[in-house]
Length: 73
Image (cartoon, one colour):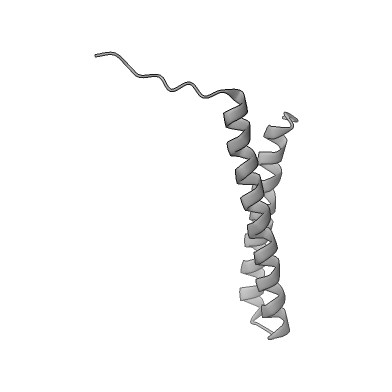
């Protein structure tokens, strides 16, 4: 039985990574809006901490993908 090898070009991979980076940026923007709305409602500090950690994780993911795209590893 032979294996089927899926070869994806560097451009295809880079485009997929760029799409992911764009999606992460959109998620970061939405998360920041949600956090702001919670702040305006004087939300519980534990909720705010958790949401802020989630935003930080999105930022870390965005930076990691961007580093790969820019080959800064």
